[in-house]
Length: 441
Image (cartoon, rainbow, N blue to C red):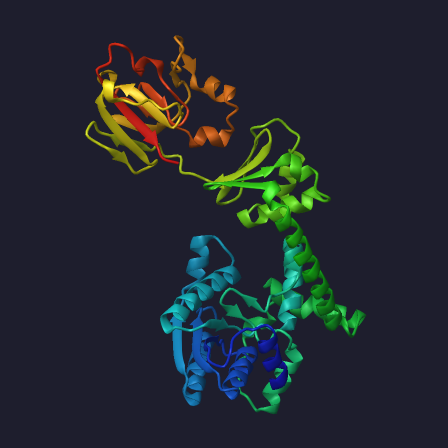
């Protein structure tokens, strides 16, 4: 098993002989065997333990055991205590998810503080099979059926080719003491239910079930890689990224061999679940304007694109511009010039607004548009609703939300920023002083 683990580390380039390792040790057989293996191979290890305080005195006993084990081996020991149930209740997540989030956040913090090259955890191939079934029950894309990866960022898993049976036999052969978590028998936890109830049934159907599953998962992983490489190859045509927006071409998406699969793989990183993605797919040919939401993102079905952008605060934002200002840094980068109109050069671009200074009432304000807004577009005499102006420009809902207006102290629109100035503030023969704003892209 030592040779097997060493080969796996080298094959997947998890770390090298000079690496400093932050080793996550719970006290269970898996992490104790991992600790013994890596210490035997003379790797530089720091032992980290999380006490989630979910099992009363048993949790404290595990922490004490890990501390004594680390001290016996002459290794640095770090521990943290979590109020896991309180955190889970506050975040409205399961105890399992709470414990996972807490430990990995802490591991990364300690990794940086201690100057460690990676976080080493004791997942093995039985864990990988269990994860397959967990994801199958939850609902997942093809990547979720590939099992656990040997390396994910700074997290590495040297035991991933070892079975639970091999690990237990190693512990027996080396007379290793370890803790037994009493909650491992509690089948109210999904992973325990799969481990204790489901997998033994498959073992009865096929004595080689676990090795068969690992081979199946390797094939799924290869298929997943193929799909992601294909999607990446067509991303230049399929996706346009503008600032914080991601625009997916509906026409190009529908020409893909499996558009629903491509859409799923594109949208899951934004937190959209399978049900919502199915609804989005069904609306590809519908009228524009429909919105869909994940926890952090919104998707707007536009005429030609699916537009994905972060959900913004609904609070009204107003930014003042005083008469003496020469530059605006937020929310847009704008430079300002003023002087005698005889010295003014008026470029023909929507990014520059050249106005009659004496017609302006300061302070000016930058704000978002709202229903009922109107202005007199440059070159016209009659008023026009901003909603009609947006419709003429074929603005999407997101374009409207991202639009900024420059208004004066009476809230009269002076400039639809980056688009059109108001005719009432134009330069005329009677103008003496100009006021010019340039939007920097």
